[in-house]
Image (cartoon, rainbow, N blue to C red; front, side, top):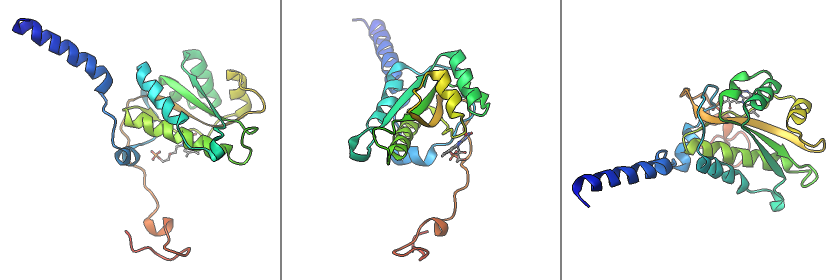
Length: 196
Ligand SMILES: Cc1cc2nc3c(=O)[nH]c(=O)nc-3n(C[C@H](O)[C@H](O)[C@H](O)COP(=O)(O)O)c2cc1C
């Protein structure tokens, strides 16, 4: 192989590798500390390999007695996304994201814990998405019956939350959090910790 063809081979290899490593996954704590709710998205797709990893993070979440009382609907069809966004209190910006993920609980599988389990799994999805460079925004404002109708979700299931999932167009500043003293106690409720 002469030098120029060797260089172009290297470039080709690098470009191919970039597809998989362009967004190196972030460290877990960095992901948790840097994640923000994203409400403006680029109309860009998410490579299938990334989408699969993000969803797999949800599937691997812990759940009470490992019952996994969840189902996730990944809405990517543009007209459906618009209808879903309308059913989410007219938060139309959601439809710009590549997908809207609807997190559905299965009460029959775990009546006591399904909401907690679904929330944990969706948070896994939220964090995995950020770790790979994508934005999400937890959505609690939605009309249960409307969303069920739009996506054909059976009556006996319970939608817990949704999130857009896409390429962020903004990098919002961190929102304030309550001070440590209001959030943590040492040993007994209201007893300050030594930590700041
Ligand atoms: C249960 C729940 C419901 C929420 N519902 C909405 C919503 O309907 N629309 C929205 O724009 N953000 C919603 N959010 C996002 C919060 O506003 C956001 O997490 C909070 O302001 C903190 O900002 P951050 O996520 O950027 O740290 C919701 C968050 C949670 C946890």
